Length: 562
Image (cartoon, rainbow, N blue to C red; front, side, top):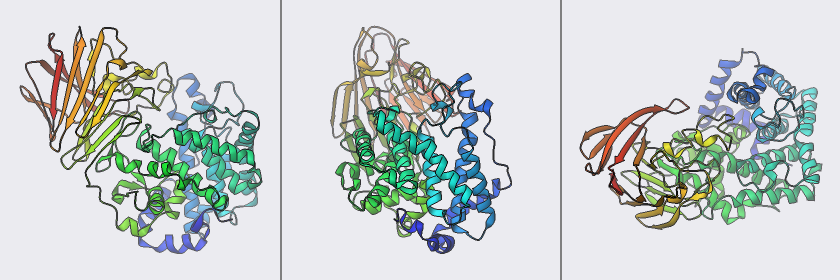
């Protein structure tokens, strides 16, 4: 059964991909990376680095070489397909596969229960499943060229570490691991897609009615996590990751079942497919609420596949916003790549204004600026304490910014410690501060009286702070083609500071005006005093806090932004 389309045709790789100029940038990317590391030894995964998450909370030291192994695994496999006569690529691939099969566990230390004592290497997390999926597809695409011992190791390790633990969970516990128990975030799609990839390619006899029902149940949970409009509260990057793997699964599953199960016929899936194009604010700058990034280069293969599937709905913008996908998307960057679409992208200049009632997000993209704001609650996926925050963007960047995620550490992933982190706290969002009190985390801390009509988005954000003496904090955004007005009114006896987070250095030009690289903010200088301070994020990005300290008797505040 051909599950990978033209990817299973050796001539596609050795003739079309190898010689067509529209694949040249991909080939050059692979060869440039290869030339940098081809003479380096395969990095060791050290015990002392492995346990570091359990002892210090540091994830990066172990994860960096772990992920480099897998990046190079996919690079080498593709080079083997494009240049089948070059033995050095195959030798390197064999060595790397053997090294990965020899790893103690494919599960990340950050996801391994009882990291300092647990010797069970069969816990299935995101990257255990991904490793199985990657090796399974390499097996499917290069089976005739892999040495028998290497092929046998792939089948053995994928069975022991991915397929068997999953089948055991299906047979014994519908809520284990935790992501199978009703969770709706990206883990569901990533793990399921890679488990299915391993089963479909290597162990199709393990596909049973129980497995089919499990796929349907847990992917139903995943799709329920999107709003009716297809919005994803995890942001564009996690959409590309989670929904991207869902697309991989749905494509394989449609072929594996010979068209009997086709998730692409689901109207909600089509809406989810259009999410990313709605998140672009200016050039490749995107909405970055919660742990999203401030920019997003889309996966060329994924977007080209979605465009082919929904040609009248999905837009694919300039290829300068695109990149080669990693993981098993690396194969699909080539397999799904549309040369004609690459040369004729859709326009990204069309203005729009849309509101998602499910997550209470407002997005306006215009000729002069773009703007996004949210109401919602403080218990979303990858949640920050950010009810009522907003983003103002123009000239290719966020000017008034949502900083996005911090560095992932043990503390950052802890529900107890996460919100002490600057990036997650409302103290680093475009929000008011009441004395020294910030918003609190949890679903109970949310906006009320939310309403939207074209040109106006309003809410009461007092409930996000959990303060008895904060009776109301009404925030109203009004906007047209030229500017945004933010109007706040409060019922609070205490000190109030309005804070904005800027990625460009502001200048206090005169009373009532702040400017910064094309940004202009005007305010009533009689109501407040203004101060600026410079800071860095945990990723060492510079940002500026612009504080408006309201005079004691002032209970309302307005700024105009353009």
